[in-house]
Each structure stands twice: as structure tokens, then as C-alpha cells.
Image (cartoon, rainbow, N blue to C red; front, side, top):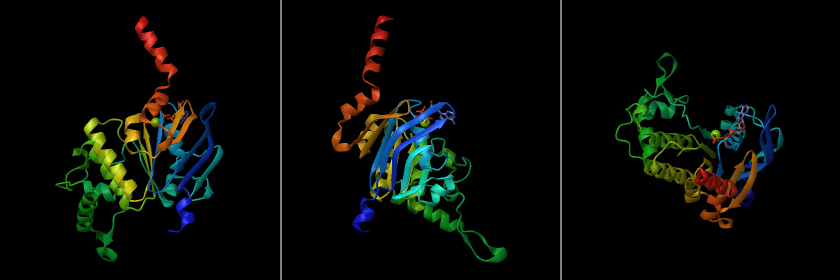
Amino acid sequence: MNRTTERTALVDLSDVSKRYGNVRALEGVSLEVRSGEITCVLGDNGAGKSTLIKIISGLHQHDGGTLRIEGEETRLTSPREALDRGIATVYQDLAVVPLMPVWRNFFLGSEPRKGAGPFKRMDVDFMRRTTHAELLRMGIDLRDVDQPIGTLSGGERQCVAIARAVYFGAKVLVLDEPTAALGVKQSGVVLKYVAAARDEGLGVVLITHNPHHAYLVGNRFVLLRRGTMVGNHTRDEITLDELTKQMAGGSDLDALVHELQDS
Ligand SMILES: Nc1ncnc2c1ncn2[C@@H]1O[C@H](COP(=O)(O)OP(=O)(O)OP(=O)(O)O)[C@@H](O)[C@H]1O
Ligand SMILES: [Mg+2]
């Protein structure tokens, strides 16, 4: 890789806006995703986090500002197009088939075949072996890749989805609140695999409500409030304390404390 490509962001959003009818969902938001880095998007409910990643993953289009992918100005028209450009998104309600084995889900939609003509069939052995090996490479030692994916814990399922994106050659991995429904221990496991994806050289967008989770792994922090960007910091510009305060909305929280004391 030469120095120029190294310096170009994988994804670069600049002054992006998006409205749904009369609702201004995003206004003047900028964000960078770089290879080997984790960009965290923080904000309360309705802040615009999901809208932002839908623009990056090709589900919605922005109305204003620019989206650049590896330096090239782009307007993504479908999730397929985003995927072809190397952007893989793991949504919170994972698109898995709960009763199918882990290996089927790992290869879902991209099954390798062997043989020719009428004898062409899915290469089950290859899929089993590869799923086990790829999960192991990410540090997940699954005893049985034949168990239905529905029997895995929420955290393990997130990890399978991350390993899958890495295996299929994603450059950018977008995760919408992967730890939202998880306990402390499972959150830690998922964050470990997010870090492993980063160490493989992917650029990661991590959406979260939780400043502690963000600060454990993040290189950049974008803070949204009611659709506007109230902060955009690199790690050396902000402490966990400041991030938590900005996230809690400072004065809003003070007002709540008073309200609760008065009642
Ligand atoms: N398809 C849509 N049509 C109309 N309004 C929408 C649509 N999607 C989102 N919005 C509005 O845009 C704003 C931002 O929503 P968004 O889902 O991006 O927030 P979020 O930060 O992901 O929230 P949460 O933490 O609850 O997931 C909200 O006011 C929401 O009601
Ligand atoms: Mg959301």
C-alpha cells in the first residue's frame, strides 16, 4: 500500500444531511472511517445514529453534503452496491435463520459449490471446515458448527456475523449497537472481536449508547444529538469523563436530577 492510499479514508462523510418528509433526521454531520481504526457514533434515542449508518450501508440516500468511498464521491443506491464496495453492515436484529446450523448461516447466500452440471451441489464439508477455522482464527472455539445458530447466545451470534464479514473480504464493518442487548461479560467478548476485526485492517463503525464501550476500543468519536453533530473527536482529544458528560447532555441531566429530587 502506498502512502496516498494509506492516507485516504475508506469512508468520508462531510456535512451530510437527511430529512424524512418534514423531519430533519441529520444536519451537518461529518465522519471518517480509516483502515485499522474504530469510529464510534454515540447519541441518545432518535439522535440519528441509525439514519447515519443507513446512508453508509446504501439503505437510504443523503440529501445534502458528500459521501466519499476511498476518495471517490459516491451516492449509494442499494445495500448490494455498498457490499460490492466492501461495506458490510451487521444490523441489530441479525438476518439469521435460527434453525439452520451455524455453518449454513455463515455461508448464507454465498454457498460454494462443487462438481459440474447436474451433479453440482453445495460443498458442505468445505463450509463446515471453513466456518470452524474462521471462527477459531477470530478466537471463537465453537465445539459444534452443526448446532442451530438460534442456540448461540446473542454475543456469539454477533461474533459469527463479524467473522463472516471479515472472511468475505469486507473493508468496512458497520455495527448497529452490537452490545445493546448484552450483559457486561458478553459485551466484553463482542468488543474483543470488534477489536480483532480492526486488527485485521478493517475500518469499523461502532454505534452505541454506551460511552464506556466506545472508549474501550474507539479511535474516533462522533456525538449526535437530535440529528446534529455535537462533537467529533479523536481519542487524544477527549477523556472518557468528558465523553460521558457530553453523551449525558450535561445540563439535561442536571435538570433531571432536580426534577427527581422535587417529586
Ligand atoms: N423512515 C423514517 N421516516 C420518518 N422518520 C424517520 C425515519 N427513520 C427515522 N426517522 C426519524 O429520524 C430521527 C432519527 O432516527 P434514528 O433511527 O436515526 O435514531 P437513532 O439514533 O438510531 O435512535 P435509537 O437509539 O432509538 O435507535 C428520529 O426522529 C426518527 O423518528
Ligand atoms: Mg437506531
